[in-house]
Image (cartoon, rainbow, N blue to C red; front, side, top):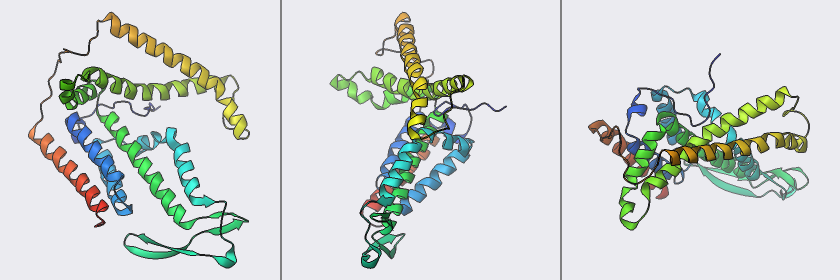
Length: 287
């Protein structure tokens, strides 16, 4: 039986994505997010293709990336439905039209299509909803790839290194980096905890896939209570462990000091320049 890997858990490997310096990976993620929030449809599809290539190079099945989207499925569905449907649809006898530019082609579409009374579909809203849903999907997937291919220790060191200039203004960089990485680490722990509690509750007769919306929501109450109790317990145990080991953020030494190789510079700077250029050209209306 295959082991199911929760969202965000580190998967060891020797691929180019795994061995790339984490500082450069963080820089690439920032540039990628900039491109996501700057691009139109063409740019989003380019970003999607680049992310798929990165997953293939890393040797991580796309099914695991899809699994990482489960926590945001409600957000994706709400985003699409909110844009795609309206309760003020125009009657069929007085339909107005909008002109939309899609991939450089001007299309004339109805402002709304009435289904039942004022309830109807907004064709332009369907396109807009798919656009926003794809943007959220890519945003979650790229951060998932980062955590899949970077260990917690490497992420902590990378964030600390990138934020190091803030030390001169009194910012506790090491503590901030540790908080970021602990938050990332708790994501897969929370996912695994939810699955474990749901299996335990299902064995006791609780059904999460039966009944209406309210009944299903009530079925999750026996999941949320022990989940929060266990998470607070884990947080207390982690704090006690760090305190008993006399943890201090400032002045920490490292067993391995990471150094940027020529390959890291080339891949990191070239990828960053590509995504920044993609975003800038989209903002200027060239793409």
